[in-house]
Image (tube, rainbow over all chains, first blue to last red; front, side):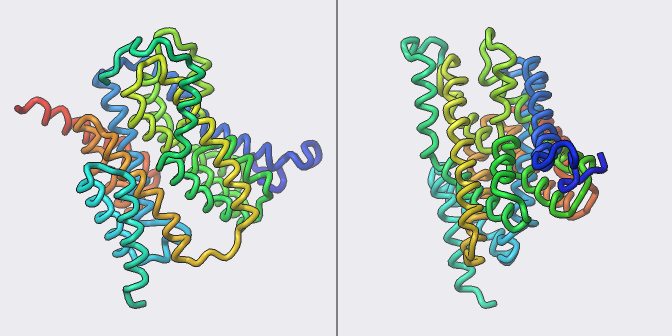
Length: 123
Length: 244
């Protein structure tokens, strides 16, 4: 439990220690939730109120991820000004709606706003 | 949900599987592959080996959780601490899979098949499922999903490897543009896939609650955004439905 990526399995797992670490802390820590989802989903009936609630929770969770990726990004996107990130998201979504919910139009519009805005804005 | 069972009884599951693999050329698949370029680069910068990077994509298949794992490894955290961090980042998979199962299953679908296929449920395949599968006959949904999911996983394993090997000097603007693809794609695809009012409310509420709770630094922000925001949206959906 206190072993790290570098030390797990030292002495008996050899070079496979890090892979064992990924299996336990990566594979198991994610797929256990998927298996639980199958067990729960198998008891849900189509179009039941409970299923509607589960869908709403799943959607809100992903929306939360989206909001965080835009407002509190990690990596290179963090270098873009927050106003520009917000403008790209809002205008991209507006273009998507205007184009009768065409996803590609929305994505391209948002990218154009980000890139052109970045090149034009001072600083 | 207009498609009826037995619409095209002559089409074999293998054909549906093959049709599903063609989804690799769709916008969501291409966007995810571009997004995975960032993961290969991150692994290289974090001191992992090529084999470890590829292994993560194959066995975890949830990009946010993979990023958390790499971050935790880079910080030298213990197995237990890392497990908790990754598990917390992946809780969202439970409601996602739970909502996905009633759409793909048939009365005679064996549970092991759902358990095995559930590994491929991540945000992209989930959103794609809700866009594509409701229009297909029920018997086609599992093979069609499997075709798409398996080819998507294989291609992103390749992208992880290639981007790891080629990780070099991308201009910061280009890298940022790559990173922006994911949230914008999820936002628009989720808007297009929302079929009931509660889902639209959940989308709007989650967009605000996710960053807000993160900013308030209360911990487990996404979990609360999902449970709280989802419940609120579900209630709002019930209220608005009752009124004419």
